[in-house]
Length: 377
Image 1 (cartoon, one colour):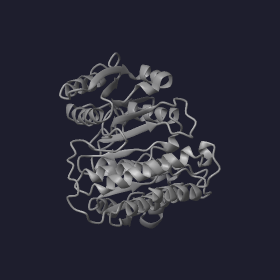
Image 2 (spheres, rainbow, N blue to C red):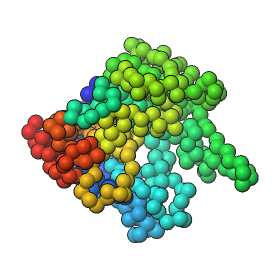
Image 3 (cartoon, one colour):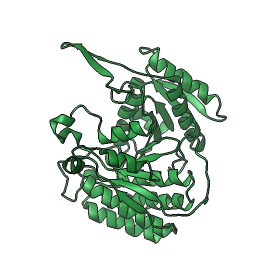
Image 4 (cartoon, rainbow, N blue to C red):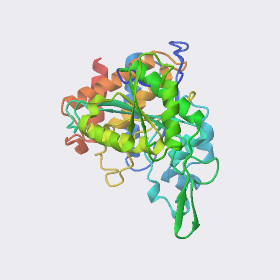
């Protein structure tokens, strides 16, 4: 979950303080498209912040994934990559361009989807915050969407094996939506704990007026769980109304919890309303593991041109550092995360931005400026 200043403390985390100060081993998965630019930029910023905060240097373990892994291993997500991830402290995943993979991989889980499913990363935490210096449709937006990441209406996540979509005849397509009390309860706890640390307001988004059994269960379980959290004010919204509310008064919301597909759509909307998906970070977490992964895609049209915006992945990595600081690693990692967030915000406020935000800075120039601001603190 996130604290008032944007730090992440995922579900039922236990803060161990400086239980041990030892080098982190983080997985680095470059991915496709602009991943080859924004992932190295993010690594540089994390290394700078960790050193400035006084923590031991990170040991990065680069692992094959995406189109490069297809070339070298014959698959976009090799078994060896998955085995290695299990032994690391956390992971940074670049974007993937699965639409460009060979036909034999079409319809399969994306590399990120395989990782989320294998490690049961059930909480997708997506902040949307407007930054000074970035033009925003909703300039006072500062909310977090907590998305249940394993069930719902997404066919690639709701079955033990096989897909949740099927066609009994060539002219009939069906989809299965899955909602379990267990999954609803654990994402509700994540959202409530986050609301307690932020401004104390939780909005449960559903569509129970039409999908009464499925999203009705989600709504009801979230309300039941929220009763356990003193000081959290709870309201509910239908998903269509919520979309309109985000546009009209997005600054009124604090923590929003919803099912998988609704959360995906609303978080993309909130990211754009707050300025751009290019500034929208994301963390995928379980109780024991976490992965930083920006919400945007691989943008193959600008790949290799030094124009990509690394903001979202940098902020996602800061979320990962916070998560690690509450899971047996040193508090100093949280201070490193603070340095990254402040340096990114100060850089944007100063008018240094990439082309997608209306600026003139290249990926390298933006990264250089953020790094220099980290060292000033």
